[in-house]
Image (cartoon, helix red, strand yellow):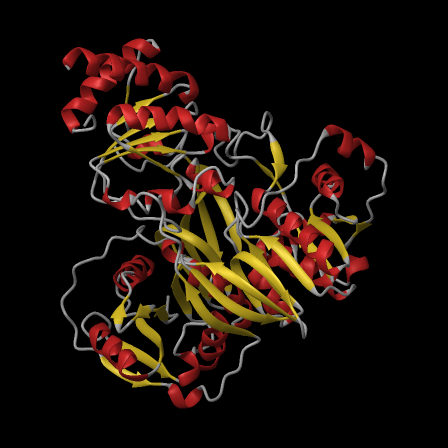
Length: 263
Length: 328
């Protein structure tokens, strides 16, 4: 099976204190730790497990710039056969639909049986996979947490729905699936593995290579634009206990006693 | 601002989903004078019961009945909506497992804009809808503008819009079924599998010691278990801990896990994503322990401790044990 995984490099929200810049129009990006978007990594692992059983190849593609190559190499070190960078000045400022339009161009220049994305990006909204499927007229399923390859060009999949329930379906190939975290246990990638793929060439394709109409992508075509960032105020905020760990523990024990937290 | 607003209403067993009132509230934020139209798909007596309920709050209810729509398969619902919705519509969906499945593709097929996971709406300015979204796990929010000239699909975060009390309306049902015809899907629903029951039922516990990504590795789970034992509590967790297979799914609090209603909730190394908080009901006393002072959990907790949980929790456990020995 020929599998494409669409991946992104994002600031890792679990590793960063996200701050606003002084102008308030963006987050402070200077000291951020970037990594592959976590669900995308699960998608690559799932693709690798499918080809290990059924044969085929795994291609990882990202829409971005030279800086994003690092996640392609990381996923190649995991075992992906090829990394591809989709990059063009015309793509800058694309919204979800613009990104999906670029990916559609790449899918149509190739032949994939299965396209995987992560369920959502840190700054996204679980949108690109569903849009890409609709543009290609492929069937789509979101929040996928198991995949079984069936005979007859079909998959049996489950989706994560409310309360830990799993919605089981059959889906025809080719299709697009967005992968939920926890579907598998992504393999570890060490520095040695990364070094081994450091010199492999990563092909880069621009709008003309992909047959993408530059009027349909980029900032000018974006229907959704961000004006600014702000820090939300959800509630009155917690009373922060101060002092040494020992002092804090004493205060907390008194509070827990009062609230019935010690039984 | 003349675009017609539609709210797609989910339902189960003849009962209207909570999102019906929330989408109505969101529609009023787009245009306070708007009278949004409910759209429902399904089949049989259950669908009729849903229409009757919705007529008390929506002035018009569009009903699409078809045997093929008996289960809400997003691929089939999309085909039905594309056939019945007028060009340029604003379509409201809940941003849950169904809206995530339906919304993006629907926006492509309607040639409309898509705004995912909206938590606030500040009305319309010319051809732009002004909305609020959260990014980076809720650490920051963003004002976004969405061009709605050719319509929009707007996915609304569950719980973000408080239902507004309005005068009861005497709504009418408009049957749109004949516009839809036969539908076939390349994705076919088979069945729904319930999760396996766990060793403990966290939904019945009064005190939960809940661990998140900050626990860092499987071996550290014992730190939380020891604290829970000292407190007379039970260990629960957030999603990353289940993803890593460090605790079973039955211990997960959140929209994709269990809904709990403890008296006291000790959130240790949990950032506080909305999916996690959605599983926390009954207004518990929340204590948050997290080394990231920007973690959203501090906004909803009563008491916060900014420290490394791996150092703090063993110390707390020891103090509780000492105290209990003294009092015995």
